[in-house]
Length: 377
Ligand SMILES: *Cc1c(COP(=O)(O)O)cnc(C)c1O
Image 1 (tube, rainbow, N blue to C red):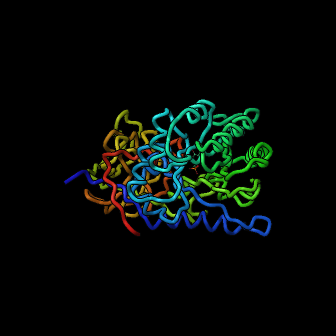
Image 2 (cartoon, rainbow, N blue to C red):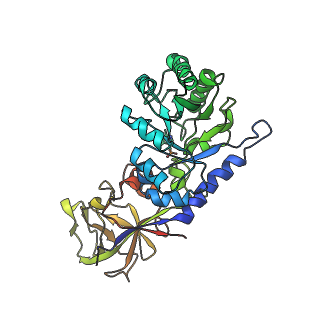
Image 3 (tube, protein in one colour):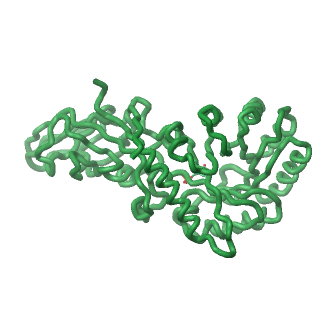
């Protein structure tokens, strides 16, 4: 028998969460903004750890898919995805352009080197491109000062049949917690791009789920939002839980107890004995460790459920095991189910908070050695 650990992905939850985003965009649709944005489901990093094939099924109703990896994009086309695919970092070398051409991939163009590579490339069909503005994230994108020139070069490439449909894009740095900075970024985007033709893409999960943000984005073109994390049932906000937002966890990460120890008062647990039993107690040993993607920084007290009962992690997480407090679950025994996060367990965001990180990192880090199964429900 393989180790008793698994990550179960719910296709139903993936499509439910997509519908939540869709409804949230719809409900602020007004006379002034009659056209609801379209949705690119972001499936980078193997669909935030959920598997590309699962994402393709769960997000069948999305208007497009956005990701980073050329091979993942090719897999989506090979699996029959016919709607748009956007490569969020564009391409890395000239030979990538031929693949983008062959598989009808849309490219983000964020720097002069990419524009120049496109100009001198030879391919069969015009390629759709989003020209990215650096509006304050200071990661990728043309500066405000260089944007017009870059966009004109893209328009000229369009005239020559190199580029097809053009769009304007930026990425928000603080949409989850700072409305002032976000509004300033959107204003800069509007001022720099609204007179230029083309589609528009600005909002990530946090922005798409904040009423009144996508409606601040201006320009004539069709707007596309780019939600990622919320589609997997985790919250982009520190102060709102996924369930507050009506989202359902798409991944349930579970394992079983493979050992039970009865400790005397004063006994230590695990490497470094960072937890010392304050009284006699039972401790369960779970078949899940940091080599499975459970965070090693999860401290004593991190929530976890055993047989449906909320309890806590004790001591240091080892490579292949972790220890839990069985005090509230006296009936637990070898074989009892443990849920690290997901349906019937704590939220991934709760585990992340107790480990000094964010749900994004935990979902992406579930190790390849953990078998992933898929359920409709
Ligand atoms: C990851 C990413 C997103 C999605 O962000 P979430 O916070 O997961 O919604 C959108 N756009 C770009 C450019 C990204 O890199």
